[in-house]
Length: 372
Image (cartoon, rainbow, N blue to C red; front, side, top):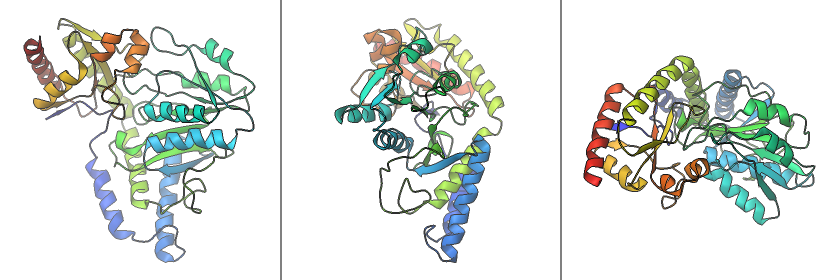
């Protein structure tokens, strides 16, 4: 098996899994309970939360644990808009967002909010001057992903956050699902951000929305106090502790891992350029972990399934996207409908080897010979 779909999900780190299993056996109480077992479970959560805050340098923030980044994104957007709609109903975003942003924005438009899309240049980077021109008195939210999940475009959220500091009624949310654990970022001027464990070699089913303490949200799930007032329910304390451990391990050797993945990316690009009819959609402003290509004359799903039959796993779009649609991100970048229908996403990791890439290239050539 050759796994090249790390942006969809990552394999669980064995150390994280071992800790999770041990904590399930040791801490059996409900963290919402007031007896000793509940207090012990709650202390475990508090320790994990403190570790997450220290690792991300976010002392003045609340950490709200969710089941996924999609839930965290829903809570951020709906929570802000429903809580602060008396200030205004205008939202700004980009055309390179995840479906858990896009679909929420459609819902908010249906209940009376308006959405503006900031312009981007030929590399997919947003136009700061255009963003500034879109900001209005009734703008309450700007939501922009740090790294696009299909192409890997990395937005300058530090510059965007610096601009938005001057707009006190407007909150800045960043979907950081594809960046936490891959790149280091200054989060000082970000009001809310989302990330998930299963993108950083942690377990599925645990993620977080981080927000500055002064910000209030309308909860999605009501039912009483829990780890915060913003999400009711029994806290999954073994999962929460495993998230903290996965985050710590992902940040360890972050620069070293980034440089290794960058070398893999450049090597793979050189090999792909030798194959006729392949267009590389990712550019110099993309992180090396994501390499998006289009293969002329071959539909995305056809190629993905052919590779899968050979034990090589890539994706066509974000894992949460409609499988029958073209890649909107590739289309918005290239303005080429055929390229967006023929694109695949190759995801690299510090676990990826050169031998795997060589086998991928060899197999890809064989498949294309048959398909063409």
